[in-house]
Length: 121
Image 1 (spheres, rainbow, N blue to C red):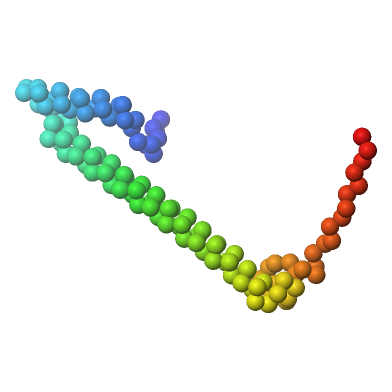
Image 2 (image 1 turned 180 degrees about the vertical axis):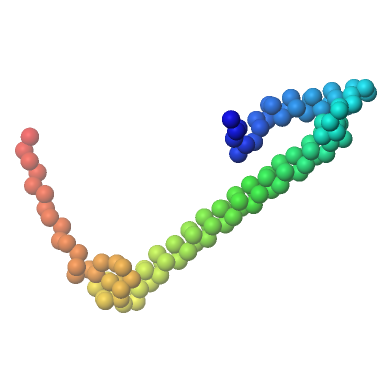
């Protein structure tokens, strides 16, 4: 069965792994038969992991900044458009064709309010 490797190892597991590497460093007679499991190799991969974590944090910060910039810019843009609509109504009048052209309802096209009958209780 193939294990999924799309999710990172949990932080508590990585902390235990770091402690294991520290313990291996203190063992003067640790000489694995496979060089992939040597202390220098473990330290090199640990340094690579640290660099990857730092790069991920930097990317998260950049993403959050980009989202904030997008939100601020979209609100600024929306405010400009709303105020432009107000300017059209002020310049051309509330019943002009220009008002309909920008997507607003002309004053003459609005429905008249209907008086509601109060029902006796």
